[in-house]
Amino acid sequence: MTVQPEQEQRIVAAIEAAERVTSGEVRVHLNDRCSGDALRDAQKAFTKLGMHRTAERNGILFYLALESHKFAVLGDAGIHTKVGQAFWDGIRDAMIPELKAGRWVEALEYGVAEAGRALAEHFPHQGARDRDELSNEVSRG
Image 1 (cartoon, rainbow, N blue to C red):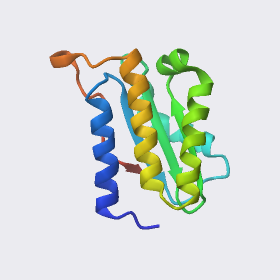
Image 2: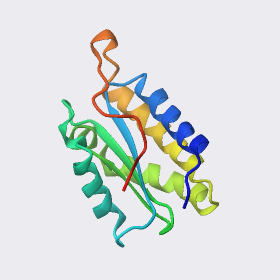
Image 3: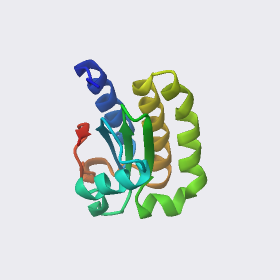
């Protein structure tokens, strides 16, 4: 599936907006197809992207396999211990109607905004000391 530049720009804008209020990191990784287990593929992408190397282990990855119609939301240990599995399940469940309707950009915009709110609560932005530890660009693979 071809991702249009304006779609990618909307996703990056959502990531940047979320990260303005948190020291946490959000990434979006797109694939065409999934191996069958979206969470396992997300874990591989998480490691490949170095998301486990953030200082506070507060990275969140949105993994979406567009042609396979599968996705996963994965948070690192630092944020997971703060919000628990119910938080991830809630984001996932809220994204499903948009995804089923083919509005995957809107689903990601919602999910990234919700992740940003949780990160801001537990890992507020550090002002001038804060640094962007990971790229905000959409990764693919």
